Length: 198
Image (cartoon, rainbow, N blue to C red; front, side, top):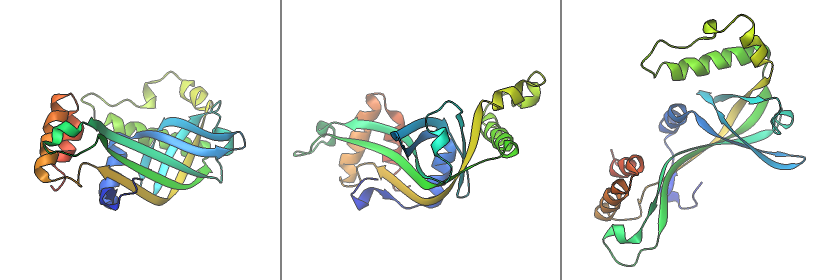
């Protein structure tokens, strides 16, 4: 989380929507071999985050009962000082990110299957097509494939959000930077900057 409190994101509901919408993040945890990371989809339901790892992943055997950190990063962009239209600025980076910290528990096979079904339903429901379900797979193949992964749930104890969009600049400077950022191909973060107070 950014140390400047002006960039702290306090709206839990908005952060939860952000995590659910993106649905993919980075899981960090300490292991006897040092810190490890995994990039994976996660499904947030209340204060519970479902995820799964390949059995060969270096984190898998060290997670149960441990504290982990799951980070979702959204839109971002470099900000040139020239784009503010005012003197005496330095280069910076604008971004949106949420950190979820909590204890991790291993799931049963039934819980893993339910989590995969829920994860697929969440994302398939956003697509303009007939949703995929495991019923479309050959008999026995889903069970074989789920034998190669392990399901986990994190009970989220801490939510930390950063929404760094130039709040420390004048509205005119922020909008000028947003225009330049969009002109340079980063429309998503420009949209966030323009709608900061919406």
